Image (cartoon, rainbow, N blue to C red):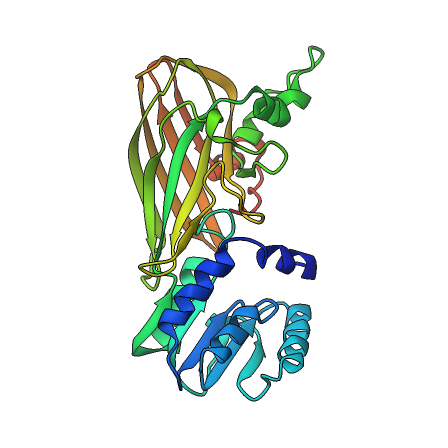
Length: 314
């Protein structure tokens, strides 16, 4: 659950200018607007200042709703912005909107119910000719070389007195972040490739990708890194690619328990399936190099431990 501090961090990076400029092009005087996951109410107030007649600011976190209501009141916008507590998918609004927008992503657009919530907004909350933001997100993949990253994930499971292979295997079948060891451009041992695209407003339970990654140099691959490029509208967007300056989104990492040697120019095949499961998504990756084939899937944790995996927060 996000804290007020987290919401503040979200307001301190390039997504704010991207969404603000896109809203300036989308919101017209007299429009009805829906803000899904309003947080502090910031973008709802932007829409109100742009001339919206009514803004429904929806938020599932009760404390955030209280802060948003106070902020809306302090800015004299109570007559326009109505903060609504609940999930957008479970609410019935008194009227359909001209514009609906939200940012429910995590480190990837397949975080939680992001995709399903925006598809529901298109189907139920928008007018037939209404405008939905964002438009789409492109998910990219690359292999990374980082001894520090590998040590971070697996260094604690090297003990000559015991076989900790099951522990290492479990780590390799989980979704991780790079907060402690940020991935930088120089860590990419292969070129990146677009794995799949999320089209917002379109119901989709399964995303698939088949790509070829070319080794930029000889070295060792320690993990798969994933990130996204966002298109808010035709003119505005942002990215959490390695080397960016976003203060909220990092990258998703799927580490390998053993490094794999690559030679410059080598072509690596990667197939991925990301499937909706409950309120989140399960991941399955198969990566084939000239010397090894690696299969990683969050479902495989049941084979290793006999228990269901935690919901991946990506």
